[in-house]
Image 1 (cartoon, rainbow, N blue to C red):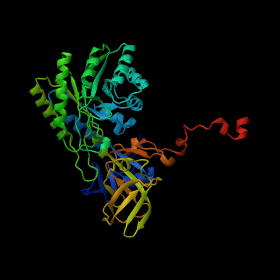
Image 2 (cartoon, rainbow, N blue to C red):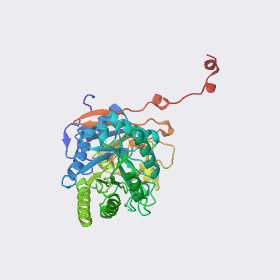
Image 3 (cartoon, helix red, strand yellow):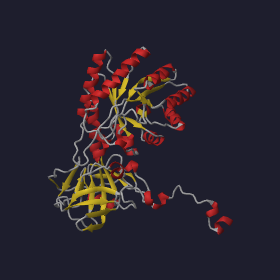
Image 4 (tube, helix red, strand yellow):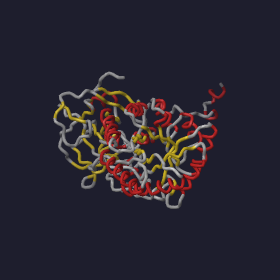
Length: 458
């Protein structure tokens, strides 16, 4: 634990455009969890990612509480792909959530942080044999099986270990979510899951049921990410319960668990946040009514929010560098980060709320493009952001920076990845240290034939 740094002092009334857990102090500086972000930048530099611990914990509790009235019981699993560190995994574990992982690395971090293996769900459309073995040896609670090849591999590995592994079958339900093509996952043509319409899902259930080393607990579906309304819930549940009823008839027993995935959206630049209570109410009502209509017992529900838990808890901070103004055409403001630590604008066309963190009350002056330092014309962080007149050294803060930014970061142009802080009660703690130049070449090797002649002779 580090000593308290950057405490916000003399907090004043916050303007309306503030991220959850943020405020403005008497020096007109943006604060998070009572930490002055300008002071944090002075100590830790930029680019800097700051996560608000109380906001993360509150979101975890909102998701848990949202399903309290559903009679069949429910589990909430944090989707680690939204972002995972040792500290975040420990917070998720302390809040009694489950965790879904999609790689051996995420599994390693989760176990190292103390997450009970029984609360870990393993996802992925192409799980390597080594990672299947690692997850089985760890004793994970669920495998979400994605295809026939994985089903056979998992059966072999479980048999080799003389264990019976609980599984869910991931189904491509043919339901479209109103979101970006790259994060839409529920269509029939998706690379994920057993196809429903051609009978693959039912055949997978037959094969799983025939194995003494696999216990088919239920079904899984995920239709997309950054979903901002619940209109797709009813058709998704109806489709899954129809399959559920067919499987119960074929297998001679009801399944136990229905996982409806994640994808609840958050506010980036004017959108609304989809509340956990709204998601839970829609899911609970659709499942309860649908089971009654079909004469089915209520399944245990599971959901997998990721961005909804950590997204709005994060703020990304950058220092303004150069500016380029082309009269009558466009103005560029360059910062010391960019697509290397946030690929989302270039990849998805993502938009953000951007504020001047060191002069929060300064009036807006002009619309500018905020661009990064990387050698790509597409290295934009924000287009047409309405900001005050800026000077070199000013600090720009991007809200809702807690999901799918740092975990997708790269070392393009050999730029070290940023520092990541966790803040609570006026104190800041390093979650991930800033990379150094030495870190960049820590895994590089210089082949012997390229060594200087004197070194080669030695």
